[in-house]
Image (cartoon, rainbow over all chains, first blue to last red):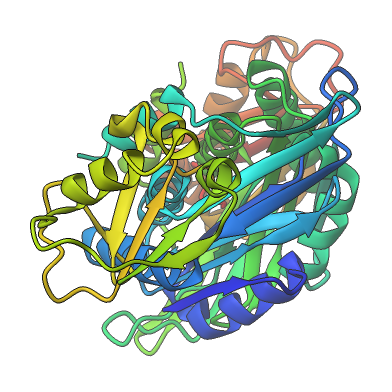
Length: 148
Length: 148
Length: 83
Length: 83
């Protein structure tokens, strides 16, 4: 298990290769990478994530341990950045390896659904109209609830 | 869209970074990497995939196009190797990007479920007991059927 | 006892952390929030919808009815929006 | 017409491809499989469970009742096991 909360840039491919090298013999690796979005009709100039690192490490470790035992994962990694990021930069990457693809996919989804609502990060968007805190979405609570 | 059927080695991390660079502004990227498995209780010395490349390209392109329109993907990539591979080597990688994580996850799963049953590859395993063709699994037909 | 504030709660209170000496009758996190809200107008406004406020004791997520006894750091923050 | 065989079908027939001149009454893929199975013992065995055999015409997956007319390449193979 590898849990990181960091202000350093994240290289999704290098992290994927390091994870795959460790977990290779399990057979199935599912990865999710969340990036700073910026669509033509919803332009974002920058995104700043605030974080409570001690609590984030505790929460992400608990989420990863729950996924590992529930889906009998070979290995699991969560890397979550904070600080200021530009469109296209990776914010978060989760990776899960297992002997079968369904377990790897389910684990990666559970990790994302839980960390959206349970990990102490707060997003602040800067758009052409100004800077505002992103509101928590009830859709995220619903996504988390399906695992209970 | 990027569809490749190849005997060349596959670098999962380099492919992920190239895909992310193109699809970055969409926000959500789901990736699945299938590797040659070898567990202590199910030892595999090597895996050889036979392929009908012209049909494989046609089938994978159709699967990718169906996923792209169904889940409104920003981009989709399927890379499938054939030939002889050793444990830990990547066989297949699918990547899907979308504005929302659920669409990216669903697309990656649909791609894998379909290519297991619909893409003309045939696996031959070499174990300490000899060489044999891998039998098609009814679980793979069931996984494919859930998307209909 | 040390209190940490994050995100818009930090902005509305205009501080990220503070040390407080609590009266003896402040036993739980809910008591602490009420006590903080009574100190000034900005705090009263910041804690208006207190059911929204999430809370942690010594870097463990806990509910508002959790006793403060023995804890060194309380954190108060809005719903989380990571991922 | 060219016929391609893959995986254990290729092994059982001991060839990956062949050119055939079809009699005029062989109209569909099902007809072709019956005609191939009648040629020798190895073929009869290879095509024993013919419902298992998947088929493609000019690199398009098709069903056994598809007419051969106009096609250049027929492929016959077992259920696929990729991914």
